Image (cartoon, rainbow, N blue to C red; front, side, top):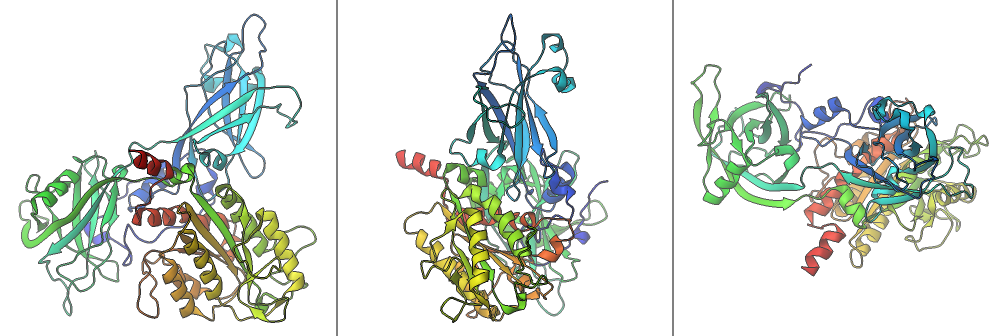
Length: 599
C-alpha cells in the first residue's frame, strides 16, 4: 500500500518537524530487536521524523579459541542472538567461516537496531564448522551438527558506551558455568551504519505572501519534501507556524544528509496557511530559476550566496496554467556542519545521570493496605512505583559510570514531623546530590521510606524540579559532559501547576530531561499540558517560552494494557532531547573537542 500526501491532506497542529512525536502502539513494533522495520521506518521518515532506533553494525573477532580439529586448526563461525524476556533466543545473524584460525577476525557484519529505550541482551556463540559442510551457505548450516567452541553474553548498551565501542568478553561453555577451562575471548565492535554526518542549517523567510484568510492574515508554515527515484515526493521537514504574518521569518532548521541525500537531489518547498481543522491551504510552492518546480540544497546555497529570492507559484490542475505569485522565498542563513549522533556523544564519554522523585501524598493510600499504590507485595510482585524505578533505572544505569542515583520523595511528613516536598528517601539530611548505590539502592531506600515517612500532601513538583535543575546547573561549571534525567512518579493532580511550568521553563536551558509516570486512576490532563507533544511549548507566568521540550509523560494505565512498556514510552524521546540541547549549544563529542584543541 502506498502513502500519498497531497496539499489538501496535510494534517496536524502547530508543531514543527513533522508533528507531534508518535508513541508506538503495538508491542510488536519494539520486540523485533534484531533489525529495523522498513514499514515503520518509512512511516516516520515520511512525516519528517527520525526512526526510533539507530542502525549499527557489529564486527566480531576472537582470540585463543579452542582447537578441536586433529589435523588442522578449528574453522570458526560466530552466531549472534537477541535474548527475549522469556529467555528465548532469536538469531540475528551469522558471520562467515574462517578456515584454520584460532584468532579469527570475521569480515561479515551483524546488523542490529540499537534502541536506547530498551535493554537489549545479546548472546554470542562460536562454532567450529566441520570440513564436510564448507560448501554449504552459512545460513543453511545446522548448528547442532557443528562443534561448540564457546559462548558469551552482554547488553548492547555495554558495547556502545565503551570509549572505542569495543567490548571484550570471556567465552565459556553453553551451560553458563564459569569453569576454569580457557575458552578464549570474543571482541565486539559497534559502528553506526550512517552514510554521512553532514548536515545543513538553513533559515528561511518569505515576503509578500498571499493572504488567504478572511478576517486576519495568513498563518504560514513551510513543508519540505524530497523527490525520490519514482518521481514521488516524501516529506522530510515542516517548520513551525508563524501566526498572522505575510512576511514570516522561521527559526533555523537542520537537515541531515540522510534527509536530503545530496546537494543535487531535488526538493519541493511548499508554503501552507495553517487551519485548525488540519485542512491547510496551499499558498504556493517554491520554484527554481533552473528547474521551475524543484529546488535542491545546492540551489538554496546559491540563493543565500547571491542574496536573491525564489518566486512562488500556485499550481493549477490544468497543465501550463500555474499562477506566478509576487511571493518570494529567501535563504537568510546557510551553514554546512557535522551532525553528531547520540552514540557519538555517549561513546566519547558523555553520561546520563539518573535522579528519581517519588510521590508520598496521602492519595496513594495506606502502604499497608493491599489496595494502596505503595503496597509492597510479599510475593515479590512489583507495584507501579517499583516497576517504573526498575525498568527505567535498568536502562539509564548503563550510561552512568558511578551508578549513584539521588533518590527523593515529595509530599510526605518526614522524620522531623514536617511535610517536605523534597527529601532524601534514605533519610539523609540535606545533600540532595548525594545518591544511593544503583537501582537496588533506590528500591531499598523507597521501601525504607515507606516505613518512616507518613503520607501527606499536597502534590507539588516545583521543589524537586528546582533541586534537579540546581544540580544540573552546577555541573556546567566543572563538567559539560553530563546530562541529567529526573524521573517523577506520581498518582495525583498537581496543586502547583503554574509554579511547575515556571520551573520547567527555567530548566529548559539546562542539561536536563524530566520523565513523568502517572500511576493510579487520577485525571492526568495537567501532565499532558506539561508534555509539549502537541508542539506548543510551555510558557511561564512572565510569558517566557521554554527553549525546548524537556518533559515526557505516560500514564501507567496505558502500560498495563500490555501494548507498550513504560520504558519504551518514556525514553524514546530522551535521545532527541539530549541532542537538541547539545546541538543548540554547539557542544561536540569529547573526542572531537580534543581533536579540535590539538589542531
